Amino acid sequence: MSTVVLVGAGDIAVSSAIELRGGGFDRAVVLTRGRSSSGESACAVLTEQGYRAEALRCDVSDWDSLAAVAARVDGPVRALVYSPAGDRDFRPLDELSQDAWDRALDVFAGGLVGAVKAFAPNLTRGASVVALSGTSAHSVVSSMHLAMGSAKAAVERAVTYLAAALGPAGVRVNAVASGPVETATIVRGLDDAGLDRLRSWQSAVTVPGRLARPADVGRIVAALCGPQLEWITGQVLLADGGASVMPPDQGPHSMSGLLSDHGRQA
Image (cartoon, rainbow, N blue to C red; front, side):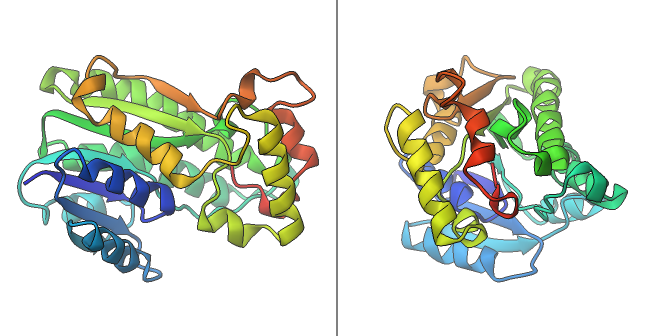
């Protein structure tokens, strides 16, 4: 039995597990806060893919909660994919509260460390941890991303320290920083005009000429969890379709002119 733990039940996490299925993974444990039925919905999709899947509830900002749920997961874990939903409370500096700032750091960076600490005894030699980050960790995509971008930057730094900590046990830790991805969250966060502008912009600045799909990132996550990339650890893979290397009038900074503040999700 090969187990993957998904911290978060979003489209990218589920797509990652689907891609891992071809690598022999057959059990999925999906962790969510339980505020919705997202965990159960993810399990239904994964069950259709041949997984034995179960949804468990925990608060990633509470390390005791993570430790308690990890204790319920028996047997070795071969992969842990960290992609929590977070509160996505996008606010500029003058509207940002300390609680919102603390929450972003606790969920994204603190939660990653807490999850790895809790599941470390289960992670078998050769296992991989992959955290999902974003381009907001590398550049200012909007004034609304102060907390989110800073938290994701902290995730990426934590990855290097976690890789050093788990390396002697034969466990690799990496991150994938993606550009905008057409997930259900982004679709809900944008009106039709905003979504059209996002698709148009990404069509212009990416090599594939389109907005990324969850499976695009899921395949990268799965590759990082496989033996072909066992020589990579402590790294952040930028997966933005080439947008970051485009000229200034086409690259990431043009996002500010394309998306409304309410809908920015990168």
